[in-house]
Image (cartoon, rainbow, N blue to C red; front, side, top):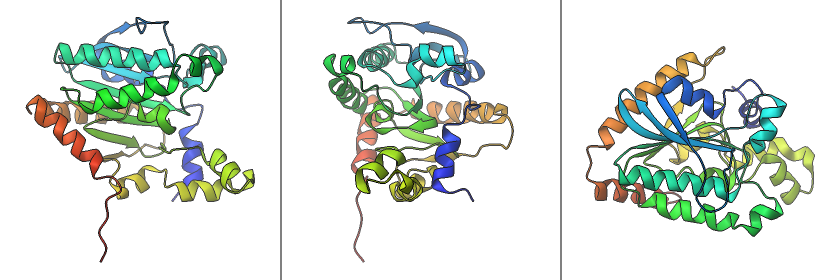
Length: 262
């Protein structure tokens, strides 16, 4: 069994498929939509309309890129405020036209540059959290690689959250945690274990619903599995009244951290 830090490294592996790869493999007739209608286009987040088994859906994905040129173009998968505002614009559009929303999360965290802070990075993330909690259409979020802090949470307020076997989801990176708590970057492995950031840890804690097992080679089987599970889950959730759907989502998050003394 891999250690927590080994899973962190696997989540960052260069050969892991990016968000666009999942969109291409799972959905049909994807049409990308651009811009937040306020400031600019953010290439770290890709979003638009597609078909899932002939069902119209809105799909939003973080993308890190593959080559060096692509990584720079995608800002290494770290969105600016306009990326989150674009995602929210597409989700509100999905609500208007009764389309389910599917999000793919893969980011070390929201971009922390001066410009991003000046343009309201924290507010953009907070608005996503608030609006997604009451969105009146089904939302499924899938962690395909890294899931860092509020930058990941901004696309993860969902009816169900799934994680690939070797993905991670944490308030901070193990490196950052080790530097802050112990002032010693060599304690990164200890930090990874303490953070409970693996899919297995989070499933046990009730933070996620599903762990998607990864094959030793290739991701084709994962694409097919996710397509099947998405069709099944969305078809079930879309039958619920909008108010019930939002209430169940709210109750899902209210249960986090609740425990009973024996």
